[in-house]
Every structure is written in structure tokens, then in C-alpha cells.
Image (cartoon, rainbow, N blue to C red; front, top):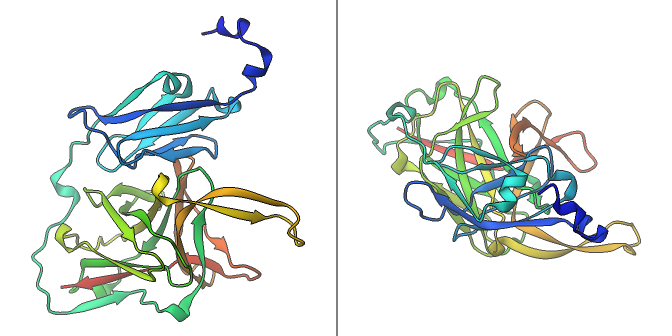
Length: 300
């Protein structure tokens, strides 16, 4: 490969390169959809499509970096970009699940409790994605003694009320909390892909079949955008007040609503560029922080 540079015209060296291929299960050889593909230390990435295929344009300055692939139920894989560009097929190793990672409890539907109950009047701004860099948005839910006798997680509610979203798909994730107080391991062992209808304001995701008990150390509920053609929408961005400078870009639906809260009241973490970090967006022209509009329903 090092001799190839001597044979190519100068203008070719300035062009970006595109990685294309399939992501497959190493044991079954089946395609893996919705794999999060991120180039570490960059803002570049994508998701594999429903058929496991992917296409990712890589900038020349990123050619010596590493790509990270992660998906629910599989070991994280890190591959040098130089090898990733040559790989028509990428295989991920399935995880061997431990039986003690999820606590099972008998469900008796007698009473329920809503945690962080919200209505449309509580919504202020929201979170969207217009970049090619995949990211997850998560909200931490601490355990409270009031949940002691009603600690079975029945459902998750997500709000989209102040945005006219088109049809879209997203993935719901639940994470344990790590030693660094950031999201750690998946609590759900199966993909939950949720379909949002056009202009739908609220989505309730029933997770009662997974029999998850509220962890005493708390946990994160995460919203994951899927960077697939189904979610693409072309929008025009305005960069000047007089709207003279415009640019068309691809945005990925949906936009998740948020509430505006005092700083420090909620813990928000995001996953992008292949790692988790704390982040809370500022309210437009305000000192408050935008928090994902997510609620829980608990049951006994």
C-alpha cells in the first residue's frame, strides 16, 4: 500500500475514501442491523442498515484512526481505518450473557407509579441530529425509597409533542451505571426498535416482558438515533440573519422533546465519537439545561 502513493495523481490523494460492506454475526453469518459505527476522536460515523450494509465516507485526516463498532448483544470491535476500508465483511462476536445481569421478579399488576411525569406544557426545546455522527442521549433515573414496594419497570414514555416529526425509527436502550457514574452495561438483552408515526406526540414502550427490577444504584434510559435512509430528511440551514447564506443538509429524524430544568437537577449523558460523557444542552437564551423528556411507569 505504501507504493501506491507513487502511482496516483496528486488530485486523487486529496479525495476522501468510502468504506462499504456488510456487518455479520460471526457465529450465524446473519446480517446485523443498526450497528453503531464511530471513528474515534472524530465526528464521523453512521449506522448499519436493516440488511447489515453500511457506507461511510472517511476524511483523509482520519485514515490513521480507529473505527469502533458496537451493537446490543455483541462484543465491541475496534478496527484500524486502513483495515476497515479493505473489509467487505465485518464480523461481530455475540456476547455470552450472564444469568445474573437481569433480576427476575413475579409481576402483580395492582398499582403503578409514574416517575418524572410530564405533560405537553412541560416541554420547551428538544434534541435532534443533523450530523453523520451517531449518538445516544440518556437520562439517569436514581432509585428512591418510595419505589421499594413498586420497583418493577413496566414501561418507558418518550415525548415528541412540540415537534412535527415525520415517520421514523429509533432504538430504546437501558444501561446500568458504571463506576464513573456514566452508562455501562445494557439491561435489555434484545433490540427494541420503535416506530414513530407522523406527528405522533407520545410513545409508550412496554418493557414488562423483560421483568427488570429498578436497580438500587439507579440506571439510564437512552434514546438512540438510527442513521438509516428511512430516517433521512433534507432540510435547509440558515447561517445568517438575513437568510442569504443557506445550505441543504441531511437531518436524521426524529427530534426528541426536552424540558428546561435547573442545572444539576438531572444527570444527562451522551454517547458519541465512541465514548460516553456528561452533557446537558443549554436552553435557548436561558440559563436552564435541556433534559430529555422521558418518563417511567413502575408497577408492583
